[in-house]
Length: 306
Image (cartoon, rainbow, N blue to C red):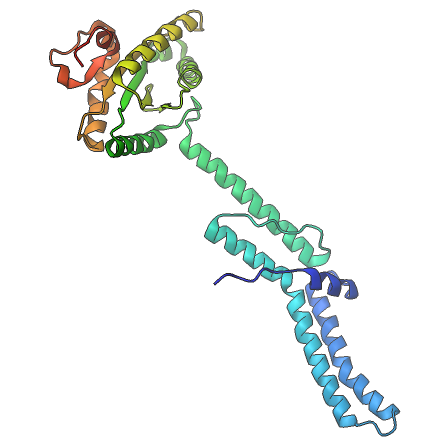
């Protein structure tokens, strides 16, 4: 059942007649005003000859009770609006824009609540970004990369699309850490992340941080196209990283193509084992069996049997 929207128009009109900041003072003034109505009715019956006093008093009591009930309901409207805002945030995760122009205690309450809800929402967005982004490279982190890879494998299985995954491994990061400290290695990781973010920006490409110093690129394209594209990427990276601090930086790239009827667990296992062995892929020879579907980049460029 949809809740009735809370309106503050009657509250604003009533608050102008009750010049008090505190809610308890407003309620007290309202009850006193309502209690005066039966007395006014009785006084009218006394002053007007022949007036039905009992009837007037009864009408005064009913009018006073009605005024008290209506007034209390309107004075509670800001509290109901605050309750609705809290429920909306808890159930739907949205922040209701609360008014900030009300005077008195209720206006203060709504202003503070709005500030708290907006701050909590901003903090939640920050925490979500931190949980999905790698703080060092600025790319999606390992957790996000694993989830994206799962979705990509599922999409490829469902649609029959060609899925090629590349593991990108900067060379000699450990040596940079030993020679120049952790900051040197971190700078190299940031350089790789910045480059990949600029280069891998086709609609079919997705890149993120994988584990340790490695990055993963998920590409919905044929294996041949991925080979050519990554060869160009590798050459451009080597050209740009000739004169960076700490000496030239190189990357090794390993490729894996999703096999037919291969599930996520099997594919992920190959990524975790086979592709790690590609650190020295440029010096390795391609495997004898073309069905392995895991090649070094340099070896893959020379193959024409897939």
